Length: 425
Image (cartoon, rainbow, N blue to C red; front, side):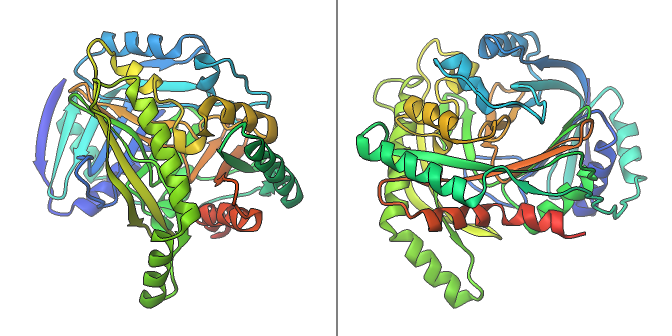
């Protein structure tokens, strides 16, 4: 493995060429922070292509097997994803719905080439990085059409959603749970799509800190996630659940009023605090005693499509806890389940009418330093080019005082960018 660092005169153009070049490979992970900066992430643009080795979940003991895979490939990048239905391995749960997208429960690969692209430089690692630079620089950026041909359908119509909502609220009032995330799927069968064109359009419509184009074989994940699930930096674990959503205003004054309303909305605040408590409890399983802290509560973060309430919880990792154990102990992301977690997941399987699969899981990478950073798979389109199945989910939290009309509209708001992409032919 050879490393090469180059100065870039025009990093924006180089990034677009690198994405175009990468998309031709069978294995691709392209991550773009879209210029968002926080104290916890340090990647601007990351590109990984080719597979020197890969890991595919067989549905049994995935986290331990993944740890062995990581141990066998140290000091390298390992991008990939963990699907929501891994919950069935962790708890006495099942997923009753079929898997038409045919994505596995987990997939990771060891890249042949990696690129870390900054504002003025790129670092390339691989067998012949100089050739890669030349290939990228001579790549022509093509403005490819989206090529979407298919009919988008609702898996859960409005009346079915309202019925599931009422039943889940009934469980809350009986004391079975106190919050649950109800999601619905939008899908197209026998669809055709240009995944690269769709991703570019999605990232234009909704640029987010965890934007990702992920490809393995004929399967694509096109993500505009704003939410960090879990990161490890040295001995520190950090989670940033999102609960609380509001639309952007039509002008600056309206935008500020909406932000002020979100910051003081009792329902949104209570949702966020409930999930903070859940995440704190999850992190305790991996933490040195007394180190779990909610360092930032109810911070408003503004994105192109929405405002969000985000909290930050950290801890120090306890002795003898392996890397994949720290993820397993918090999986799946609490912001996508509800509380208590296991009861909520059991009810989710009962009242949702589609399999979540990759949605509500985690997408990201393990780094050569033994760290990792994973987003929550939301605001994300899945596409299987082999069988033509296209899918995305949206969801929202149900509490005792939640209004079904508002929650239904929030689901549509969260899917706004994805609807917009598919309609922008």
